[in-house]
Image 1 (cartoon, helix red, strand yellow):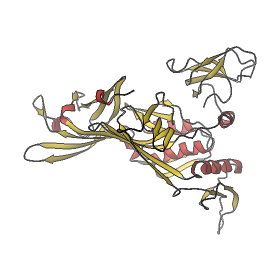
Image 2 (tube, helix red, strand yellow; image 1 turned 45 degrees about the vertical axis):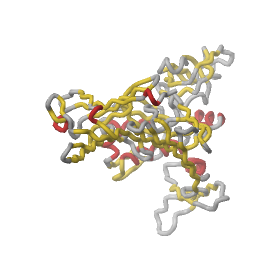
Image 3 (cartoon, rainbow, N blue to C red; image 1 turned 90 degrees about the horizontal axis):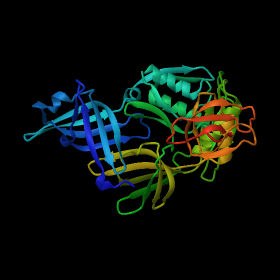
Image 4 (cartoon, rainbow, N blue to C red; image 1 turned 90 degrees about the vertical axis):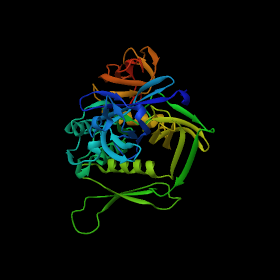
Length: 415
């Protein structure tokens, strides 16, 4: 449990000469946030133009300098936000001088840029994203997102944030897990939604508020799949996928590419119905600040109408007020059959790092092999399709603190 009274924050600035300055005493209005449709984390605060070793802070801390927020809470500490200064707004009065400072993490350049991207059909999600990030000088430090084969990927003069989210969305529609991109201490990762190890619980009390709204504004109850018509006139409707229409017909059109089979297009349309075919529920929770909480994390709520597990869509941390505002959505857990079906359809290869769900690992792949229970965590595939084939995948842990898996496992036990 995090005790708010014991939570505190330091703001560290790194000058052009790589000198680290603790400017906490000169800072007020500190906050950092991750928006639902934003790649980069934003940091903001006001800084008094105080003196450090007889030099004004304004001469030391400039555009491009690094700022970091280090938080201390009961049970932990760490850098919770880091970025480069992108904007300084000077405000001078008779009594003092302050600066409004805005900084973003190392995904900001991509977020603000456009590019053209093309991959031939058959490109894997992980490979495509690695290629895009590599072209921007960014190395992926961790990948626990989806890895499916795509149809032709083509984006022209498109925002890079939209490209990355589009590739991940398409991967999800093809049976992959839902994932986002985020940066931690200038290390970029593609992480599975809800894959956090520590799940924080919030209860309704005097310090926690909640707002819950239900809407059909973005409802999709029918998807028409149309062909690529080169002649004049309307394209041919190749298939129609219907959802629940008790709220009326809300229709989307999906273009069926020649590089994608009609069966794949129907699956993608059904994914759209599954995702957007029921009224949208949006919820906001205001609570005491939990510094390490990130966008994409899972939380457990028992606040008013909000009961159960939820995914954080966006989060704003207010250090001065010791408060945090989260936009959340209800976590939709897949059935065991769905997980197993996805695992069978996915092309896993030796060397892939996957998320083991926890369960039994066996000393061999044969049906009567002895097994032992182990916890969930990240692991690498070291062998596939064992000679016994009852347990066809050999996994070796990537993090001994998460899981001790080191043996053969069944289909559907990882993604």
